[in-house]
Image (tube, rainbow, N blue to C red; front, side, top):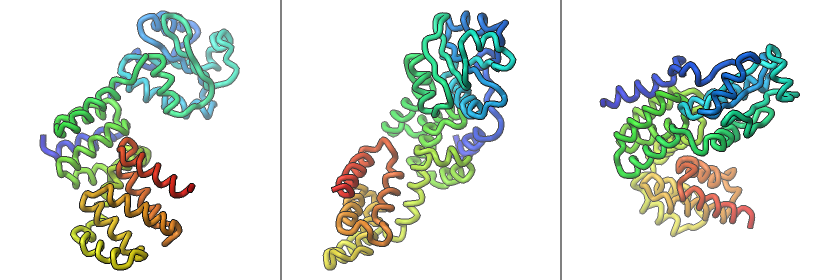
Amino acid sequence: MAIGTCVEMLLGQNSDAEAPVPADLIKDTSTATFVHDVIEASKTTPVIVDFWAPWCGPCKTLGPILEKLVKQYAGKVKLVKIDVDANQPIAQQFRVQSIPAVYAFKNGRPVDGFMGAVTEGQVKQFIERLTGGGSPLDELVTEAEAMSAEGQHEEALNVYQEILAQDPEHAKAMGGALKTYLALGHEDAAREVLKNLPEPLLNAPEVASVRTTLELKDATAQNVGQTAELEAKVAADPKNMDARLELAMARYGAGNREAAVDDLLEMIRMDREWNEQAARKQLVKFIEAFGPTDPLTSSARRRLSSILFS
């Protein structure tokens, strides 16, 4: 598939159009239909029940998170919503005193629950306890990552596109797709996608990593090829912090990430406040580009903490 078509597909996934949702995956219910929609349905598929009301502010935050994650689980769990104002008998039966209140049903009975607006990560853990595992889309991401690790970048890109077709806001899939663009040498394509992403997705760690990688490539372009010259400058004057910073950028631009990190950590050890903490700020940029799962990220953070708190 032509890379231009791939870009159009990725950008197309982030339009206002949404993939169709199966009729019984997310639904509203009432006191009259609660037994059918929740009790009976949970005997075959776990059901999450969201007690809410139109006037409830936290409900407006939690509701979309529940819907998004239930869609990611592609039929492994269902969501049923109950307006407590219109269905007071069932709300009283479950002693719902404040909302949002969420219950999980399995095999015809409640097995878990929580109250209040919690984070997306907490909701995900709640669903994982209920289903006994991660979402099918997360499993596909793992498969795509393995493909990329084996050099099968085009195959991985196809999987990421499949995921994004089902969940346009899946940050790991979007970040993975962008990284495959870089691996395939299609930087312009990655930049085009980044330029058109909504802010919440753009700032997700997996996507921000790619954005920062490209920013650093631009920032280090002028230093590439100057490593030997800068090494000589630092050797002649170890306190030349400007030269040390340029050396770190040159080494990063040349792909010598570990040495670039070493340079910045040494600068922080020598004078952490130099140029308004320029070395620490640059190291943070490097770490963001590496991404949260890169072993060098944890190593750099650990060594930085050791210097700052020694």
